Image (cartoon, rainbow, N blue to C red; front, side, top):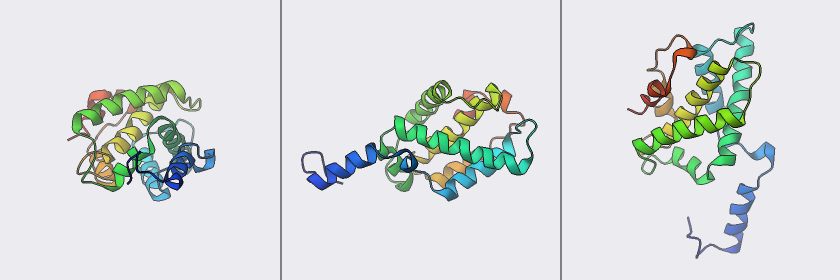
Length: 168
């Protein structure tokens, strides 16, 4: 990728187009990644009064909200780190980002149909996987697999330390 000084006009316009993308294009996760995360959340979280099959659909929508939030609050270049395991952020930066982005997401996104404790867990869990995917030597599948090691039975009991333990 070109440096700012050597960017052509077309490259600069492409940069702006990505930054100012329309809402329906403000998604960086693939549908396969969204589905995998929705399935994983469905295993770990129970939404009161909702059937299992509908829970996954709700989680898809929540994950898309989180992806859009990250698109709005992180440089698009951050997402490129998911595809390149040779570059990426270090463990300390991953822990810091998980904590900061989760708190910010919880302030900016309200999901009134799930309890606040579960909402907080969902934000930290999804953001934890996505930030870990951007770590040096990692990718989405590795971060997703690390999340399987979390054995919590109740999302209310999950705290930052447990989620940071995903950073191995």
